[in-house]
Image (tube, rainbow, N blue to C red):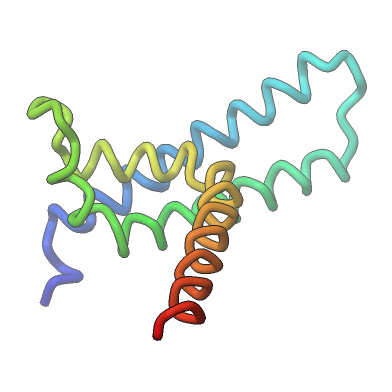
Length: 116
């Protein structure tokens, strides 16, 4: 079964580790703001970290194996490293990807409408 493959499990753990690092970053920002932390702030950080974990896991599942071949530096062609990056940056960069994807789809739809 592919779900029992230690390499795949390792990728998912790297994703969760990256998302936890992002969660620590959010906590550090809250602490440096000088404002007293409230329970609401804590719940927001937890919700953001949970969404980051979910987003990173989905991105890892869909893209980790497929994108590694496009990385130009052989020493960085590691699906686990990419999974870690998905955990750290995925939730913040996903809206940019949606915007780019929407623009691309609109251009493609325009081309289809112009075809003879």
